[in-house]
Length: 334
Image (cartoon, rainbow, N blue to C red; front, side):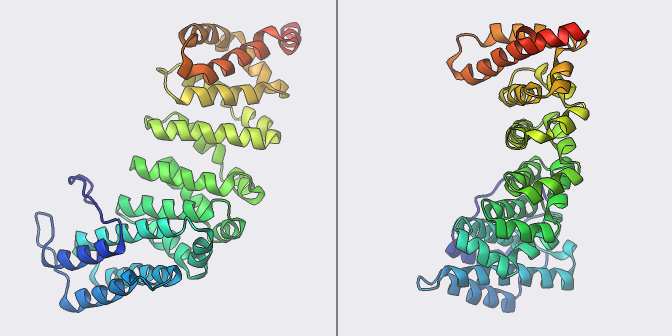
């Protein structure tokens, strides 16, 4: 993968893609020579993308033409081999994904993309691509299509999208891929019963736990946010999550230098102690040192307007674990 080159500005419309595709045929970056784009190929791209740029072409036709490019690239890759490909082809495909993601913010277009096989292609060919820019754009496109679209979500489950996205979230070497994959996971499991079942069967909560321990700040924050939302929406999962040792892991995250993730972690801890005796017991264990940690955090946050919600979670958790009637019951049990 050519990951260390200087970032480029990619075209934001199909006219720009056309220009990129044509211009790139005569030159390529890199220390070693790369096979230039053939005249036949340039003519094909010019014809295909010029049609897309016509004002009278409807969005379904635009999607079809974009998919033709992505499918054609796959055929060329099979013929030439990945090592012989020029970066101009991959830049072009990245731009195509950007266009599709924008088009599929419209729910009808997302459904059409599914019907035309675009999601199948994204999962089978691009989630596992060697170039990170294509992997994260494929994940982002999946998220754009799945959000609030049960029909698309069910189709994605049948394609096996969720396990692949969880794997990318958990172990992809590129931080942007991990964040975008988690975004797609969120769009598939929130308020979606079948998605939550598959999330549980693929040990999704462990993926979130590891995400919160990552050195990727965005991944940590989004993992904690998704955990909080799932616990709020599916309170019956509390015992399962507590049994994984989640309380101890969340408190260890609170001991790291202060960051936006702490607000969601405190919210998740509040969820885990409310109407969950095992969670309350775990939080109240003296060896965990949570009471002293919350006192210290309360002092640090008091008076800071930007931390009001986090402060509220902090006070609420203190009350539930150490000052309320439930806390008294725990103390009597010790």
